[in-house]
Length: 300
Ligand code: ATP
Ligand code: MG
Figure (tube, rainbow, N blue to C red):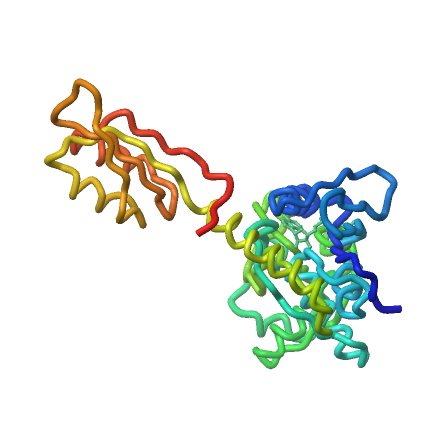
C-alpha cells in the first residue's frame, strides 16, 4: 500500500520522549489538531493533514515504504532501520528535510566500572548488549573489530550484571542510569537528535506546495528558537560598544526616552541568547533596564 491520498500524512511518536516536542512543533507550524488518547490518526482542522501516532520504531519504515509522507524520528532509530533494511534488501531511501534540535542523546559504549578500557579494539569478540547492533557494527568495523550481539530492546544496562554481556551500547543523556547499574561510559559512537524526514517518491504538486509552506514556517520556528528580542536603555555615547556586545544585532531600533537626554531605548533581535556575563558587561557600559525576551515566530 502506498499513500496517494490527497491529505498529507505525518507520523510522530505516540508516547515517549519525542511525543511532546513533536506535537508542539506541529502546532507551531500552524497545524490545528486535537489528539485523543486511543486514536491512531488525528485529522487537522485547518489543513489537509493527518497525523499518525505510532511507536517510534515504526516511523522510518512507514516513510521508506511511502505509507506516510513525512515523519519525525530520532536519527539513531532512522539510521539503524536504514542499515537493517539495506541488509534485508527492502526499500530504505528517504529524504532528511531538517534536523529539529530536540531529542538529543548519544549512543555510547559502556563497560563495568571496575574494568579498564583503552580502545574499542579491546571489545573484539566480546558480547555487547544493544538495541542498535547495526550502528554499533558499523562503528566497530572502523576499528576492524567485531562483536557478538546480544539484542535487547529494553533494560540493556542490566545485561553485564546479569551475566548476559561483557559491555553495552545504549542511549545516554545524563549517565545516571549507567552509574546506577555499575557501568561507565567509555566511548560515544553516535550523536542523535530528532529529524524530519520525507518519503523519497516525489509529491504531487498540491502536496509539495503544502510541504514548502510548512518548511518555510519550520525555518522560522527554528530561527526564532535561537533568537532573542533584546530591549535596553543605552547611554548615547556608548552605543557602538553596546551593539558589538549583542550577537547578530547589527541594525538595532533606537527610540528616544522621554525626559532622558543622554540615553536611548535600544531594541534588537540577537541571534543567540545573552549570557549573564554579556548582560553584566552591558551594565558596566552604562546600559540599564536590560530585557531578554523569547521570540515565538519569525518570517524574514
Ligand atoms: P516507543 O514506545 O515509541 O517505541 P521508545 O521507548 O522506543 O518508545 P523513547 O524512550 O521514547 O523510545 O525514545 C525515543 C527517542 O528519543 C530515542 O530513540 C532517541 O532518539 C530519543 N532520546 C532522547 N533522549 C534520550 C534518552 N536519554 N534515552 C533514550 N532516548 C532518548
Ligand atoms: Mg521505540
